[in-house]
Length: 588
Image (cartoon, rainbow, N blue to C red; front, side, top):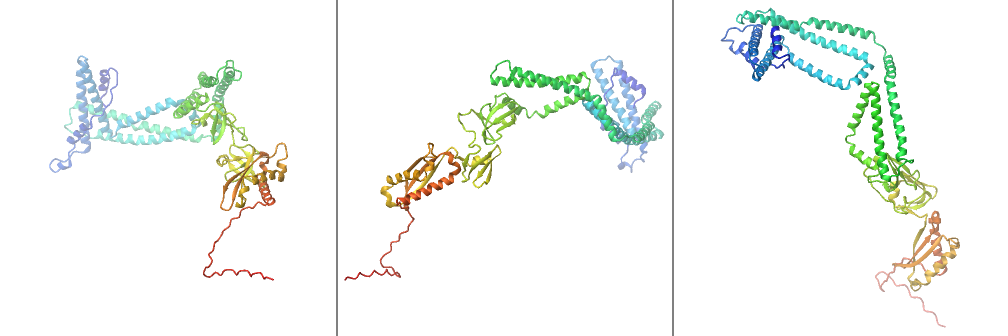
């Protein structure tokens, strides 16, 4: 601290603007300490060192003298014409004066007061910015827990005041020690010593612990009052809820009603523009674009109307919540904007998936019935074959135009199928998730739809073919291509009249042709086409046909080949006796 008259003249020199405070370079203070405080290494040759208080007083008196000298230079500059160079010199002297003042206070109190002030200032500015941004929301939240927060704040204040009181008492004792100490004889003139003592008196007034002690006692009494009048938590919560519905709840209800009403009216109006009752006949893709743009504009209009309503009602809390919510949504959606753009293109029927085309989804073909905010997929061959998906599920997929008479699934419910794992059964249920087959004997076999399609099902309900290979002995080679096929073509209808005698026979055609020559016989191939009505008797009918083939062979003395092994032995082999020759017949 500098004398009072110095402060007044400083402000005049500054033209009413307070100077920025800078600490005197640490090198100057260290040099002063090196000069005024003797080193231990010199103690043997020099006189005994003076007491510590005398060293500190010498430094403080020196700083006070520097302050006086700097002030005199500043007064001389005030008498000169106020040029730019003079102003710069004045600023330099004022900065030096601030540094001397700060160092004097730090050395006298032994506290780093400038660091503490800078920290408090920085912390205060940060809290002020946060409070300015979220003050309405913070005020509303603080009302709910006002009582506990006040108690906690009082406890924190008491703790801070105790620490502050301890520091100020230490600083006050240091100042009193300096004031009670005797200054060195060669410290300076009487006027300089008087300025030094005035300086210490001002510091003593600044670091008077009585005010802090009174604040501490007041905070302790307030804490006792708060803890004595604490209400139950349930009562506090009930009062907060009642207060909310009296003020905020009403405003929230009004705002919600306006949002919903505007949305309903404007969306009803959309049907007159681009819905079923549309006034204008537009192409399908343009209709999609118009509906999407209109929906976005309606949403923005409803949001802005709600915010204007809160502004008119002067409800800054709900308005702050809405703004923060919109900012949070925008921030969270920054990485989803490219995907949202693709979804908007799909919703407008401008993407890679288009309406009324064929799409493969989950391994199953679907017809894209419609695309909007949701996509509707249809497959009439599946039970429950209508699926609604978020349009985002179609991002990255492709559709193609539908081919005429193109099947949408290999089977229908009730069809008989043969799978590549030789499973034979009737389709009992088929959905998006699974296909259930009813086997002979009422056994049910379950497949996921993907597994079922991977087994390449053969649907025999529309018709099927038997391919039977039947062998004959080489002795029938001459009759194999003419007589024998005719025997079977005539014999099969004769033995299976129920499958041939109707106007729409179950066995449609029979083809017999030579297949190949085997090691023990000649093989014919029988191709028999059967109507799908007999799909439920696929195995039984196959057995009947094979039985008839055996009967026809027996009736016409057609020899079936048997695998044989022929051994040609030489006349004389060691250890083997030839069979005895039969006796010659007796002659009469």
